[in-house]
Image (cartoon, rainbow over all chains, first blue to last red; front, side, top):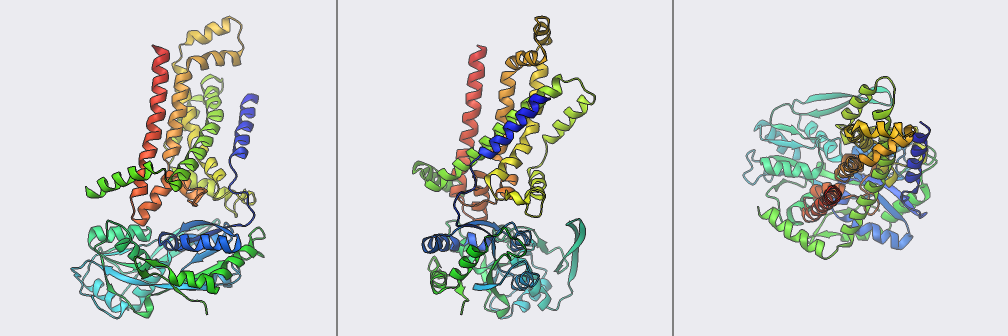
Length: 294
Length: 231
């Protein structure tokens, strides 16, 4: 038994000797949504940030819901997400110090070229979704509590259609909490619980409609060899506006966070330099994001 | 078919150019899985011996539990460890989440049962007369175990190889506890998952080829070693 204990100690020592995550001082952790990483924007911003300020950002890309959760648990120093109402609640509840409005892009409603529901050119996103529902045309929802999923639910509510509340009970901090998603009822509505890329490929395979952020859509349509047959059928409605915000985590709530560096990072993003990089970022000649700082 | 063939050739070009990002990812994978396997070996092998040799009640039950743990899904281990090392968890102040150490912890938990269970099998296959002879020659229990270990060494090595194979190919623990941070915790499997998310396949296919090559090389070496010694 003693020998086993000794070996266990050796095992722990191995763990301690394992390469440390990073020794440098100016390193912060950021949870963000998959779209900022998959769009390639961070590959432009972060090296420039490091050059200007010496700050290195370790990026953990998840859905907006999971990224906010990381912030609420104090697992990261800053979050960079797109669900404005939830971000404002995050700050109001004291998890973050301030929401910095960084940039926006917009959502588009995509569908197959054959457009079975006839939504092409609709100026109103709510009208387009209503037509899809009435035609019972296949629709793919991310259903993953992400920023895009949050936006999609708001759009369904704007249609005035009869919606169904799908409630799931989960255990959070020992207490049972209900998570409710509002969605239309029907076989044509597919909630897949996955990221944007998977929702796009799913819609492509099944020739269905899907709501996507423009950045991921462009990346899929033009940024790779395989292409995507889905087309933009509805765009330009102010309701489809998609703002991104950066929030440093509140050091009063979590004393261990690197608040000064996180704040410096947020201020750099909304500075003239950061905003220019965001506005100049192009994917196959098309702008993806528009800076929001005044 | 074009998709696969084009990705395959592009992947070979990427490999031939020794792409820096690709090499970094492979290095992270090998480091993390290597340490996990080391930890699993130094804990799992003695654990296996203890279960096979020890005299205690419920030995059969422990073996059954270890065999059940072989089927443990990686996301379950991921969730379990996450709950401990998240800032809100008991070990939160250690700041382990989203680090290579976190991945090593999760992966070790995943494969300690693998090493232990296969060690039990290897040890039990050794002819009883080895241990009986050793004991009649005056060996104590530890020395007897060493004699048996010598006889079971190929089985134990196979156990460790299988464990390494499991962790280098797993994605749940690496993604949940490592966070897929570029240059720090991005492994072959999490990088492949990301490339799939981005809808790009070239790097993913290249990493897949590296992964299979490593697995093949390892098993080839093991096989060669075993057959040469036995011949």
